[in-house]
Amino acid sequence: MSAVHDRLAELIRSAGSVVALTGAGISVPSGIPDFRSPGTGLWANVDPMEVAHISVWRRDPERFWGFYGQRFAALEGKRPNGAHRALAALEAAGRLDAVITQNIDGLHAAAGSHDVIEVHGSIATASCLACGRQYSLDDTRARLAADADGVPRCDCAQPLKPDVVLFGELLDEAAMTRASELASGADLMLCIGSSLEVYPVAGLPELTLEAGGRIAIVTQSATRYDHYAIARLSGDVEEDLEALVAAVELRH
Ligand code: ZN
Image 1 (cartoon, rainbow, N blue to C red):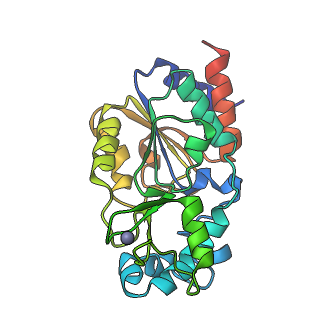
Image 2 (cartoon, rainbow, N blue to C red):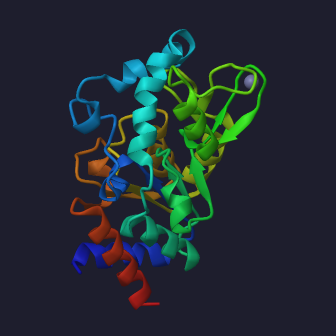
């Protein structure tokens, strides 16, 4: 355990309000590729920002689901890792108020975190925009597999849309309002596994700093907030968070 872990643990213990903001990097140890990184893994031949777009879903649902079905497959059976569990442990110990996440994989809830704000939505459900019916992930997968064109369809025959925020869509207003309130009220924001590049989520640490709070950054890539961080960790995300939780719990 390093001096940085110890210092950050002390900040967590002395803060009145601690909030975590997580991105794709926290789920990489669970075997989930960061699909915003072009040219990597499954997404070598497509530009996700182009195909996971609301206009493609509307215009060409077969093409959209041809891509999104691969995302569903990539997420199937994935389990939370030590970093997800570390945040759940901090919440259970009363040291963490909430997790704001850009991830749609549902792994924070699976790890036992209770207050999770999924600002980009979740694959847990899919909806019909025509009639409003909502379907579970299992049901959506079954409909996708059963359809000749590979498009999961509502009972009313319209294509379903995963309840995630697609490119070209606005973020859920209620979720962003809550996230902004948490950011403004935080004495300490832990920014984990996010390059903090995608707005409006990337503006949340700024709200914390403007309100007089501090930010700590646990991520491998450089971020625009690095100079403002009171602590900066860039090792293995599981090891860093497990060491942090151990440091918090060792010295009550
Ligand atoms: Zn419908």
